[in-house]
Length: 146
Image (cartoon, rainbow, N blue to C red; front, side):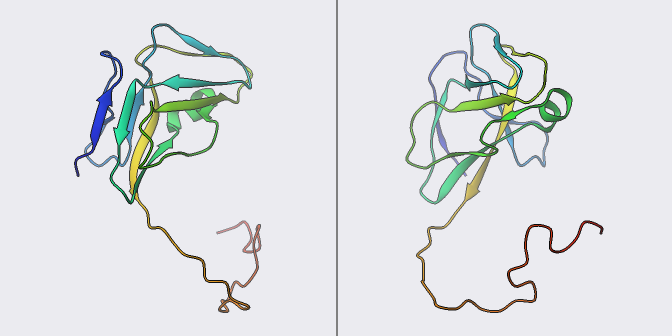
């Protein structure tokens, strides 16, 4: 699949898969100087990139597991969505959940982007839904242990 991408700054780095079987491409901070995110604070990190996704696709902006595990830094909105009609700069909203400041350096890999297909739906309002074994059980109703 080919997707149109525009560098908004000459030094922007194109998203890149780090391994052959990786689902996500790393997004890189396109900043002139370090951005420090204080404890329990957030910041939008620019990537210097804009994309034109085909209809029926989205770009999911996900955290990098190493940043979360080692530093407590992750996307503030869990998983961000870039819609097919958005043409602005991709920014990554990072949240520092730790008690230490975290510095994002120019060229740092700050998130992953996964391109995903989706379908539009139409709601069908019903008085009853089909029965399942689980039913309305939720929020831990299946227990903790394997």
